[in-house]
Length: 314
Image (cartoon, rainbow, N blue to C red; front, side, top):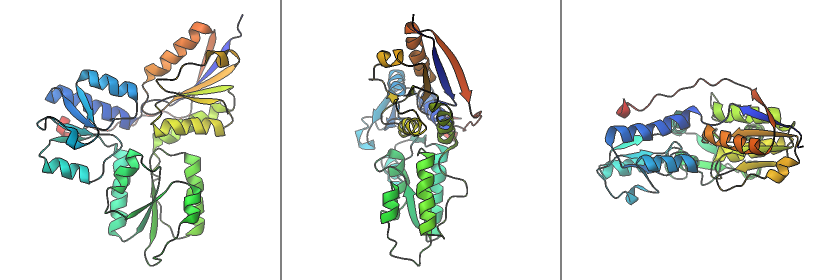
């Protein structure tokens, strides 16, 4: 007889307000304009969400030049886009709806204000992530320096000390790793200016806090999310750092490691901000088929944030 398995469910987990808004924008656009509706890049980084929206009438493209019917509307993803993208859309006379998360738009506005005031700008983030490409693309090329790691910060040389210095960050980073980089920058450049309210978003912070609270109690930890989801990958790193070395990203191609679960007494489960809750429930149901379980939900915060839809859809 297998021993009862204790499961700690991290809360909050799954969809954040920005992701819900982006998915709503695609669905409401299809309802309002009919199908197809084009979407530039994955609306959010989750394969299941993208597949479901395709079935409803969304066509996903890499670039605006891939749009076959230019009379149809196009939606920009939640991660934000460089300024050149809406400019190109206007030149092509495309109608577009911007699903950029309002918390990403806040970082875009910060970069523009700092640039106007003559600041040298550092962006802490991951190279080639769509959000970073979008933020760097708000300003002329070369206006923003990217810092990915503490090593980058250590190697940083500021040639023009007459210009004031400021930093902004990607919204989905590891809270602890980013704090370490910021502390180093503040020691190296005591006058560096940061955002009034930090750029890492409430949802990223809450999900990481919930994982930290339970990871050390767990023999295994699962984060449900896609491989290209920055915040999901960060949650796996957070779980490992918090004391559960046996932490895994449960993406759509990954099989449930039942043998390892059999050798565990406690497991933790969370999900990235772009992962639907039904994927968590599917994982739980599959584990329940094989093992008697007791589930405890560990809540670190209540999320009541709701973002308004763009005026085009009202």
